[in-house]
Image 1 (tube, rainbow, N blue to C red):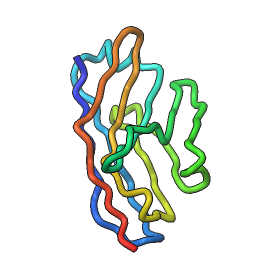
Image 2: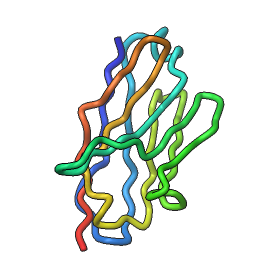
Image 3: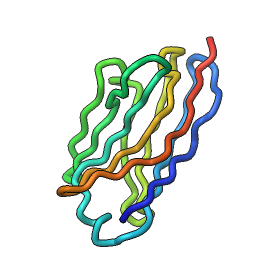
Amino acid sequence: QVQLVESGGGLVQTGGSLRLSCAASGSILSINAVAWYRWYRQAPGKQREVVATLHKGGSTNFADSVKGRFTISRDNAKNTVYLQMNSLKPEDTAVYYCNLEAPYKNFWGQGTQVTVSS
């Protein structure tokens, strides 16, 4: 099994930046099998949506609403995935979750709250 711990959320003003971290621990075999790294978010009363995707080969994809403002990256040595969020807007307020997808397995973090004040 793999455990994911997110951190870096908090309260920030409009236009500010935050960097979320998602540290993975547990089965090294499972961690090494991960092919997709994703960040999701869920705002109150809304469905969970994917905002950023990173494939182990390096390709990335972003939701239209965050393109040009968010970046996703990982540090293999630290088994950590990051979400750099710049130019934050009030509509970015949500609980952010990291997700690691391996063949036949899906791992989720507990979520971290991001609140952007206007």
